[in-house]
Image (cartoon, rainbow, N blue to C red; front, side):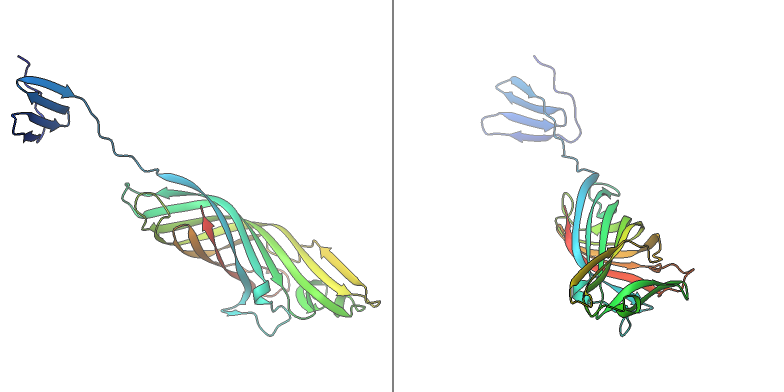
Amino acid sequence: PLPPPPSSPKPRVKVQEDGTTIIISPDGIDINEDGDRTHYDYKIRRRKQAQTEGQGDIHFGWNNMVLGDAIVRNENGELRPWQSTVFTLGGAGKTRVGNDNSKFYIRYGLQFNWHHFRLKGNNIITKTTVPDGTAFLPVQVEKPAVTNVQFSSYNLMYLDLPFMMILDFSGRGMDNAFSLGVGAYGGVRVNQKRNLIYDDHNNDPIKEKIRNNFYFNTWRYGVMAQIGFNAFKITAKYDLNEVFRSDRVTPDYQIASIAFGFSF
């Protein structure tokens, strides 16, 4: 006769009408039928969720300049709000903190941010010598022969390192339900330029692109918040430092933006 199966904690026993006994335990399955015992080994494994996932970011939205606690208005530096845009492209890692049931995550990555600022009227961004600094002035101050300004803007490009703490209420996996995040970012300016289209005294169109630092700060840092559902995200950012250098006579402007996009 075969020896009895090894004892196991709290086995589940089922006796059928024909006298067959089935014992299911952590050691396997034992079937006793007419005195014959058959043993089947098995393993039940729970699929472990990934602790970290790599993701991509693509977002588009609008930005503006803030002076104090209000949007810049009634000044030469006032922007066309619907034509002043921001575009973000980057990648990130999202890591769960805790066990597989945890809803708390940290997110970190690398992003390129292109900020486009479209000025109103015939104003342009320009450097001044007395005093030494940056100002937004009518183009005729710099170019007296200009008769008609069709387009005036300046662009900034930053390489940013964002960091967020996120509550993600997804089931198994990530980004398949409502999420809420707050965090901060720091970055470095990698490019800037001024764009200008105008007519000269002969009414001939002139296009200009000037790559000048205009006393922009090299570094920036700020705070951010994000709300999302599945992969769709709405992200708001606010620069805590000023756009221009404080050691020159420059406007005390800061960048604020809101963007819509996807993390995938």
